[in-house]
Image (cartoon, rainbow, N blue to C red; front, side, top):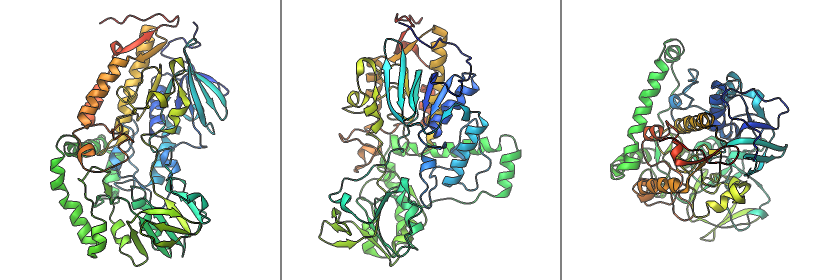
Length: 511
């Protein structure tokens, strides 16, 4: 057996026309850029980044709907190595987050490594040569290691509604907002009441003729404590050493406390429901509408949403909240299950993303040609959300059971990046060509995670959410404090892996 990549710590940056590199990173959202920046800082310059769009940013590049903003405090929503003193608000708007990611890519010297307009169409492991071949819209690339920063919020989920393909008006998903389309005076239907809808509905409500909001399950909505960051605060963040880091640590600690209710003692969340109930009662006077908007499941079972203007928008005379469900769509109307026909000019889909059924799993083939979608047929699982048996040298960022319900995903990404960096250093130290998690190690880890997640509010709160797959299994969220995950990913443990050298011989790891 031969390999095109000799293990080493410092490598030359790839040529602009290079088609191979030691590490292939997929995606330029927080995950991909975070991985690439750490490689660059460690002097591991032999990497390429494949990006399907013409700019960096991932979900924060793609989601440009009116009102788009983060629901995680700005202090937490940045890399630890690139804290941002320039946020304008305690909850950052989408344009600022996108600008931040573009700045990180430039400041960290990542742009020469990125191949833009390069849609990944498939990845296949070559067990003879110990390399991954990645097929793209711009030809094939090869890498010893692939790091997939695909992002769980990257592929819009479109509803399967009878007749939707016959609709003659405009229809688009919130993540593919049609800014050229004028909604003024139109009859607009919004399908879905998730995190995107509660942001764009208040923005478009004043301009449309009539807005019908199709709600399947009402969300819990909390007061949004957003405010402009004061000039004195920004001065301190810019010029006083440690001020921004201290603020970040304080906000992190407060957020981490909420994990107790989500993951350890869901019963206390019942008492916490007093706050969103009071928020609803203060903003919605009509008892019939208020009843429609009152959840019947435990706070936190579905994603808790933050908004001060969502409920007021729904009380306006040009808004109807429809809860009877959609029976079918005709060329010009939406027909509800109780027989009402609602004239519709434009349909906006706030129907979320493919989180537990990632389409890319159908285009990744591991050892012996096994397809990842088949390997995960029962449910997705990965060791520390990062590695999968039968898929050597493949690392996932924001993989199974690494999502969060209470704090910043950037913290989890950086934890996984720490783990992958130590894995690469381990390969160098051992002269290894492949790393593959042992099936029994992954199985034991997954059983542990599922035992923990079974007691969380996401599994016991009495709702059906996108956290759960079609078998009712929670393969999305991390069921513990995030500092526990950081501790577990601080060091790569080679004893959990099957490790081989370039000639295919097993590498013996000293205990």
